[in-house]
Image (tube, rainbow, N blue to C red; front, side):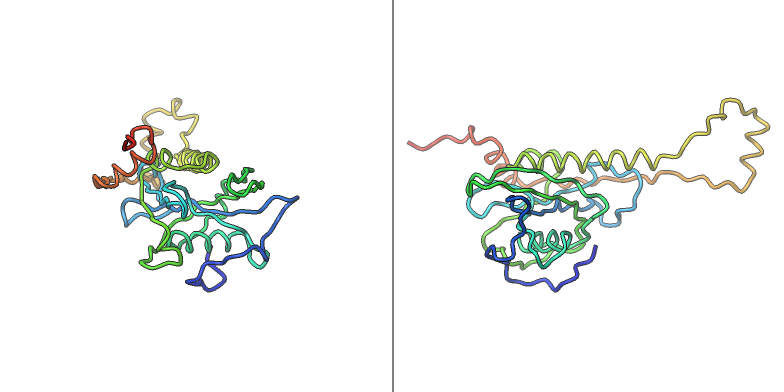
Amino acid sequence: MAMTKTLSMISRTGRDLQRYNDGCRQVVGCIPYRYRKTNQSSTVQGTQIDDLEFLVISSQKSPKWMFPKGGWETDEALEDAALRETFEESGVIGDVEVQEYLGTWSFKSKSQGTFHQGHMFPLLVTEELEDWPEKTVRKRLWLKFSEAREVCWHSWMKEALDVFASKLTKRNKDDEPQTCPFDELCNEQTVATVSNSNTMFYEEPIISIEANDLTCEEELRISLVAKPSLVKKQP
């Protein structure tokens, strides 16, 4: 869904416009993703989870990785807030897939000691910008599904990613051509008649996956973040 307001290069701060529901702060975020082949689109049938890459960002205060999210404010629609927060924190814009809404999770903020409700959407990235509001305080990294799930710090965000994968699997299943239940009863003459008719037959597109391996530096960083016990403390 297109953004209804102009994106600002200054991140919103403060809680004057923050939404609350029964005392719970309302938070909205996105799982930004893209196809590993640039000539693919969101309508391609048969897309598998490994055909996609997911964008994670670092926390401002620690080396933890997560998906972009932030406060939903009273002067904006939910999907507008999702796109704004994603742009401010990760520097990407795209289509917030409202129809693929992933769900709402309740969690307690350890730093603030308050309860939050987090709403998550998939966001198909159409543009990755070189400059964005929080560029100086965050890093961003494109990862495969399994890698993104491993390094993501928040368990509720992992669950949102799992929901995304489940929806993709269901979409592929729904897109599969249906087999006629009477095919086994058809004789050769009937089959030949159908073949010579104006019936159109569709083939699933063949998706060629190109290697997009991480650099050694990125692999090391992921390993250290995901498995901190492997890091030896200096005496």
